[in-house]
Image 1 (cartoon, rainbow, N blue to C red):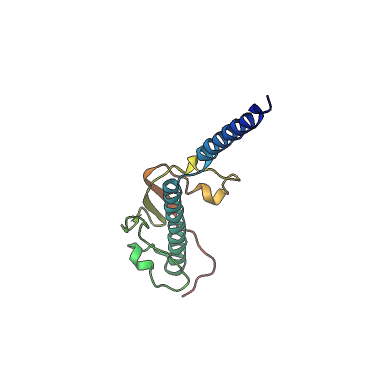
Image 2 (image 1 turned 90 degrees about the vertical axis):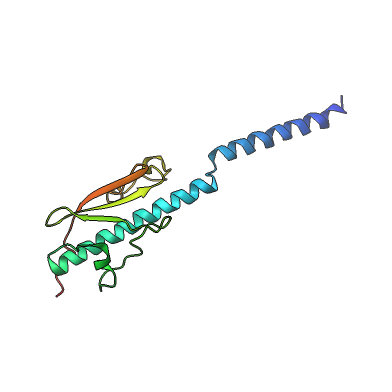
Length: 148
């Protein structure tokens, strides 16, 4: 009986290692998924900075820019990029009305499927998206005092 004790311990440890490894693999985000998630986070970040730059442009000129390139190099604005980080295609921008505009991007993932520690802030809910081409209808907001 004593000769089987080490074998039983070894088998128990082997089973524990296999179960732990499989469980870890299920919950671990694959590198490809992590990469696509980061691209979508970057897209949301870019669209947020573009939206703020449009707001600043509106505050300064009382008009919306005709195209995204009109926002580049302006003071009081910072735009990380007007191009998709994965494809290098420019984000879509369209003027809808005097203050209304639309920003579009192609997302790889659905934001509802992303695991979060906390519920999204109200300002983040604006940028909730499905996978594929998504357009956000926005309205220019005054950023405070006008600078002329």
